[in-house]
Length: 413
Image (cartoon, rainbow, N blue to C red):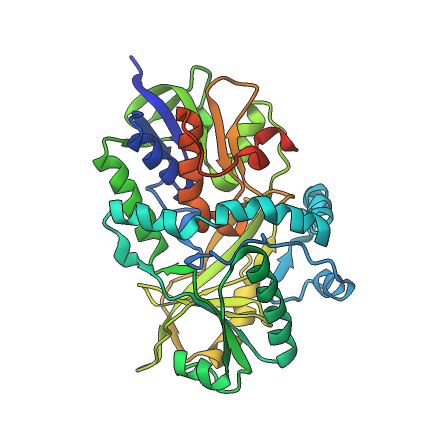
């Protein structure tokens, strides 16, 4: 049977893959988008819905002895691990720890911030084209504090980010926090609102809208298995074989399966996370996403209800679900905000694709003609999807790029 021909096949219909497909299609490429599930139904489904303009420093590995000892006990609310995963993850974690040295972290931020700088404007442009602007909320998000020590430490960080990268924020004492969020616990010390960041009321709906926009531009979505990729860039789908002269691997935490089979040994790791939706108690309202800094979870108002998201779980990608963090923080979250019944039959679990230098892999794979990579965005996949999509499309079509792509090149490891 003759293969259906395209210019480019994009493997992975999460936020990154969909944005790559949109930007290539806008530039006149005929694009096929392939995933085993409909767009936005894996990792992109379960995030906190933040577009983090303040995220100029990617999330570092804790280096303080006290934090390391606390995490070693495996009882922390914000980080848990599977013992059997530590041996497998040890090389990744060692490199991650080394890159989290303050001087190295600051150098990484100089490159990483060039992507973050454009995250809100690129989302707004894409959402306007997709007629999905109503899903974006330009209200910022809030960190809340139970102690003055935590508030002072976070304020010092915010002030540093403002000096270095122009990140704007607003300090909220207890009274102003209550004005912004009347239904939060009145015992809170205060809060800090990042005013330039946006949030999303339904991440799955946003990715779905971007995918529909891709189709209105003439692109096609296929249900298929990325693991069937073979030379000539052919992929088997439910509609038959499709082929293209170029392929973009944007499979999030599953990218390593395809890239390693093609001979690329990239130091990828996985951080898993969980969420659950709750109904608010009668009359209660949450106006912003709210991070409980000292307890390590986030509450976000979503279309389905109040979404409680957990921190990180170090585990093998296909290991059984262990939502112990969710069970541990739920009683605490109920004291922060008046949550009512659970709305989901069971907790959702997803996996974040991570690199040890905390920066995504964006660019050409040098060993193969027409092969491109776009993955490894860790906690900022939703944030950086449109920026990454534009950057890959500009590189593939020979345009001047929005930012310097060299820090994110495939062969840097």
